Amino acid sequence: MSRIKVTASALAIAAVSATAASARDEIRIVGSSTVFPYTQAVSEQFANNTGAPSPIVESTGTGGGMKIFCGGIGEGHPDITGASRAMTVSEYELCTQNGVTDISEAMIGYDGLSMAISRSNSFDWDVSLGEVFLALGAQVPVNGEWVDNPFKKWSEIDSRLPDVNIVVLGPPPTSGTRDAFVELAMHAGCKELAYVKDGGFDSAWVNENCSRMRTDGPFIEAGENDNLIVQRLESDPNAMGIFGYSFLYENLDKLKGVKLAGVDPEFDTIADGSYPVSRPLFFYVKNAHRGVIPNLQEFIEEYMSDDALEPGGYLTERGLVPLDAESRAALQDSVLNAKSMDAK
Image 1: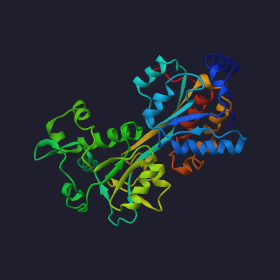
Image 2: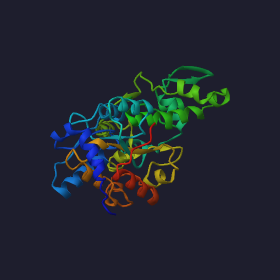
Image 3: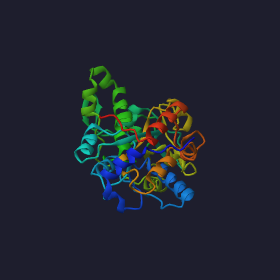
Image 4: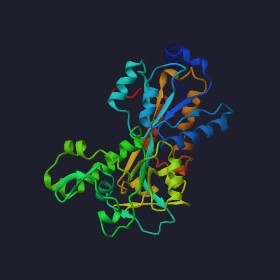
């Protein structure tokens, strides 16, 4: 595809609004641990192709990245943030309050929120979203009452499951992966339960009562470094982890996916929507830094290239589920031409 440049007038505006940024030579990127490996891959490809300094990429979590990104314009603030969910209204308002008013949004593809376990665990794991909720919810229904979660072993939830302790490592509240898991797995699982279905509880009740992860031991917040979760799963064959599909994909020699509702987390099931816990991935660009931070536009061009994004591209080789051709073309046009996202 052609490499489209932002217009001279857009660069002039950027230079006026972000002259302080010109003192920094390296591109700075923060944000989602799930988007991190894709951005890191683009950074390596960009540096190899151009000889320019490799961007500094930090895994701060989606929420943490948004706070840093929205802090302002200039060399002290990052140029891009990755996100495993869309920017929220409150985050957009924070950006606006701090003068970050011209932002391009890039939805780069899709990811499956994978639950995984060591390959040394011989059980063929297949759990419903309802069972996931019963394992991890802070409060759950027991004998017709909504109570603090008493379940310590998987077999206590269903006798077909192994008689082993529930140990699940997952992301902290600052992570977009945590936000997505709560919405796509916990809320959906809660709604499957007879207590909720028969009780006629609405979505507001579910949001209020089914969003909290338990804090009594079985669920362990493992920080923003998903590689540490992989290491823990290697050392404990009964522990499960929650992370983006790319981390499972890159560690299939050590880990296996846990089926959710009978469906394995795989490239094809995420792409066709049959895997029940999938979500879009994003990055956001501070347009005032284009043309001021050296090589930023060129880095964005590499991220938007067909080599990176198309089926068979180097990002799909790392586990990214790509957009269809029409959506990809629209994405490339929007981001390369620095089109601002609509106000939230």
